[in-house]
Image 1 (cartoon, rainbow, N blue to C red):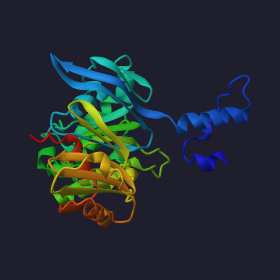
Image 2 (spheres, one colour):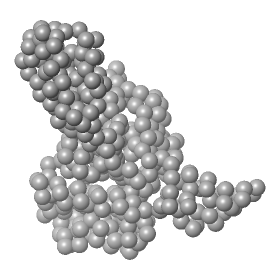
Image 3 (cartoon, rainbow, N blue to C red):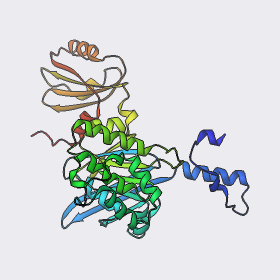
Image 4 (cartoon, rainbow, N blue to C red):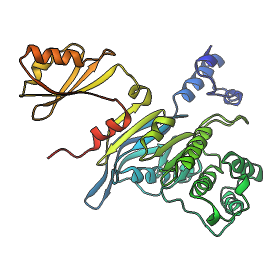
Length: 346
């Protein structure tokens, strides 16, 4: 029964070691629960200061094993700083973080052994051949030749393996960076803007590669937990299970993509010919919230699959108001991002 509830979250080797005083069935259940709800990344009240400047402000979130999580924010919001802390290249000023239950920075070597990191500016030795560069990295992690060949195949580098890196397109250079991050078979991948500067075809290729890496592999290896930052909204909508948005060093949204796709929530922008108290608008059916966005403009949120614009128009007529504008706003990631990160209107 529990194999059906938690498919693929354990293997027979998990049950080899017995614990005194616990019946096998209870031990198995505890292992199942532990693995099913295990966290790949945990961040608690994390802050980072550069002098008087606060780059991260009490950031907290967790990422479960197997999730693909998109990390969005304007330039300077703190994305790269947080990723560098998780990768062990920076130390937090306050708070705590862990990767696969290894604490940062106390267990830094174990952290770096259990994750692969592709920084925003992919550091490659461009005069080296692709295979030569990957063999160099494999030696650092004591990776065997079979794993090296597997990674070259997985990342689609076989046709390019005997070329020098400077001869490659940017898309293939990103593949080399991903391959280097995968050599030691880490459980977690942290990718800082992996598709920046790619053309549409290259972007699709890297997107498909990331999705493939996240899947359980035919050889029985578990799929990776992936935490990636990007400025491309469509990228997150296409491949991520969840999105976290950061602004001015603070988390301003953390939601599953399925919630964002829920069409039962609709947003309507309306402009009347004079101001009305927001409490009066609460009389509208299915209304969740109302916000004055300046002057005689209002943002209305409804929970209904029925178009609520006629109801708003009829309400205005009954109240003696003229409706100057009445628009239904599409609910998508781009609108949410703009709403949460745009500077306030003067």
